[in-house]
Amino acid sequence: MIHELQLRIPADHIHNEEYINEQICRELRVRIDDVNHIEILKRSIDARKKPVKYNLKVAVYINEEFNDETDYFHPIDVSNGDEVAIIGAGPAGLFAALRALEIGIKPIIFERGKDVRSRRRDLKAIHQDHAVNPESNYCFGEGGAGTFSDGKLYTRSKKRGNVKRALEWFVHFGADKDILVDAHPHIGTNKLPKIIQEMREEIITRGGEVHFDAKLTDLEIENGKLKGITINNDKKYQFDNLILATGHSARDIFDLMKTKGVAIKAKPFALGVRIEHDQNLIDQIQYHGELSGDNLPPASYSLVTQVDGMGVYSFCMCPGGIVAPCATDTEEVVTNGWSPSKRNNPYSNSGIVVQVSPDDIAPGSNDPFVCLNYQKMVERKCWESAGKSQKVPAQRMIDFIEGKVSQSLPQTSYQPGLVSVDLNEVLPKLIAEKLKRAFKDFGNKMKGYLTNSAVLHAPESRTSSPVQIDRDDESLESTNVKGLYPCGEGAGYAGGIISAAIDGMKCIDKIKEKKDAQ
Image 1 (cartoon, rainbow, N blue to C red):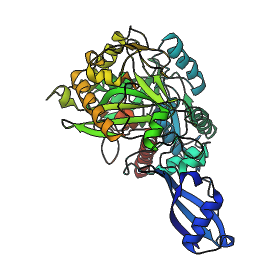
Image 2: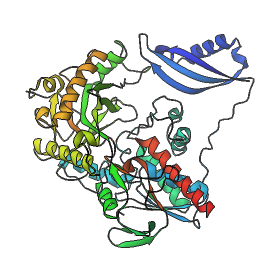
Image 3: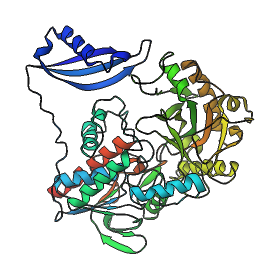
Image 4: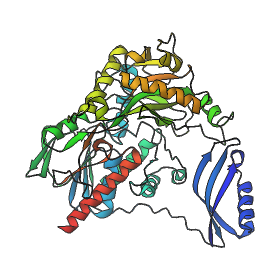
């Protein structure tokens, strides 16, 4: 017999197997000798009050054999299968390709950037030399933006699809099985590149193709149907079906869609700053005086408020993390954050962003680029205000609220460096005023959060795509170009690694349905 059981375990006993077994036996009124196996199904931390506890959902096998199911992925050889083009090797593109291997379709991936190993040299150049390669950076290249910016694997949405399958595929390719049970699964930037490589090798071994330094530069559309593509302004390929999974920062793709008459529109996005605190401070606040260690991971937080009807919230919170330079072109600066698997850096960081709609910027405008142009404007102004390099404009939190340039700035994980400015003069008033009021509210919700030891890095601007490529809700094809499947974050249909991966799988399944119906 298998019993599912909910347990609350004090944090200092979470690694005490004997204690946990005693709680299970007492609850079920069984002897430990009758328990063949205990499988943890879900694990989360309850830090609402002291002492901090873990919530465990477990399956207890009483006189029942346990079979450890690890056969998560079932590829076949697709060398002779129908071909589909996939533009982009981020999570949407890779998981579309992996799903294609399961259902007999041959995926051919075109990635504008470099392979995951070669990307490292270009990231180093951003940090050390302030040199941005527009084709290879934190956003562009094998694995997409998530590869070198954290690898957090959770999604708030419950409607996007099979989250469990996406996590299981990560485990199949090398991720720790803990991601299957943790409430907020996380791989870490140090581990994710190897997993991405394994995925690529599987795609090639099974008959698919992966092309790097291969940028989509044109579409051939005839009578509302996709006919082919051009790569690098040179090589032409014929395809009837294409998954467009280019990520939220491929601005040239938005230009191409508009030029080719593909239906697009402005989409709400979020913009603000990335704030960095000392991790010990966040631990003390969240764990009521306790610090992270063997029994508790570095603490995270999630904050949200409304200011004059506009949402302000934390985004991509990175415990024990690093603030990174994520520009994709010259003459702009962009910040993001990431954490290694152990989350053992001395700082925590998080985006604090304001939700912005097209009507907030230009009421009544039909310009599909109204939010994109606003995003560009802020990134360029930040670049100019910090000396036209990859240094970022920065300010202590309370100094920002009071409108004072910080006389000094604390230590930071942001390697290119900081320039002290008044962010009230750099950020649009719409954004700055909402942030100041939100910080005060967050300080009330988290006592100690509002402190001048925290530093704001500007801007945090690539939270999601500011443009949406329209698609049909049922077929997932472009509303006016058959065979074109806008997919993932860049098209406006996902909000992170997992949701993008699931969207990629869904698009491939729709292509299979269409082929079977023909």
